[in-house]
Image (cartoon, rainbow, N blue to C red; front, side):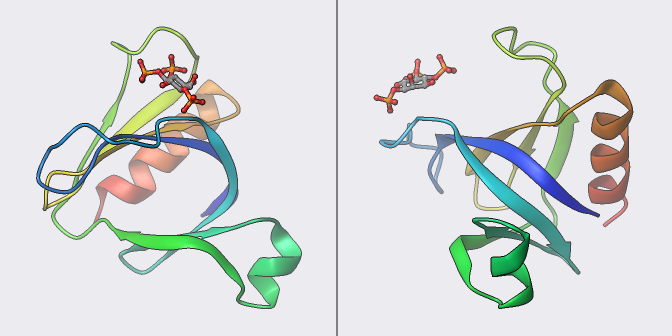
Length: 104
Ligand code: I3P
């Protein structure tokens, strides 16, 4: 699965509050157990990453309905306790991402 997602980091690894907390749009691609981040689709084809990948190995994936400022948001809590929020484009797209990520 791949597509444009807004991402916000809530916690750094270890569970400390993240210092850079603004939303950023990435062309996001699931490659095996890695979420990879690119500026756009062209950069994906050129393999020019915009941000380090996030491992979803043993991560917790959930729909973030407790986060009410944006719609269709899911949360990833990594094995090392970093936490990220992702905004998808629709309810269907949200289910798609959560299902695909959750089956790892
Ligand atoms: C952050 C930005 C985020 C906001 C975050 C701010 O500021 O406004 O949108 O998260 O609030 O710190 P900056 O752009 O200067 O980094 P929300 O959209 O979730 O409110 P937070 O620190 O309360 O998470």
